[in-house]
Amino acid sequence: VQLQASGGGLVQTGGSLRLSCATSGSKFRITAMGWHRQPPGKQRELVATIADGTTNYADSVRGRFTISRDNAKNTVYLQTSSLKPEDTAVYYCTALELTHVYWGQGTLVTVSS
Figure 1 (tube, rainbow, N blue to C red):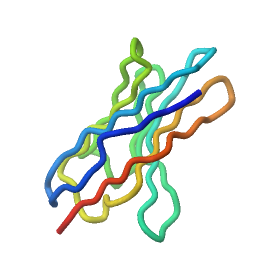
Figure 2: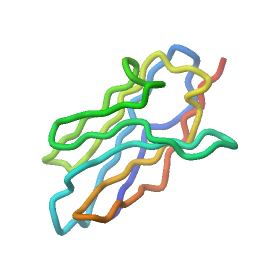
Figure 3: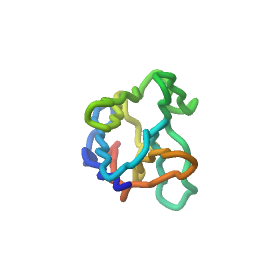
Figure 4: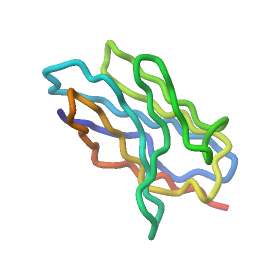
């Protein structure tokens, strides 16, 4: 399974970005998708997941970020808003097929103060 993330960039505090992640090559149904991020010098952390319409968010982004999925396109989105400098990170998308988690290459989001 290949994942291609896009939509990152430079944005000012309070701004918004929409991240996209398209998947291809899956042989079985992708049961869950998600977004993780890795801030500079820090460990990777979970941002949001979506599975069968159920969503979960990290406390730090709840109310500001929205994850959604287009099943027909096997694409997952992360709509971000009210961005803060601490949201600066490389954002990675993930896809769960059977028991294997696949990772995308990451897209950089930089929030300037």
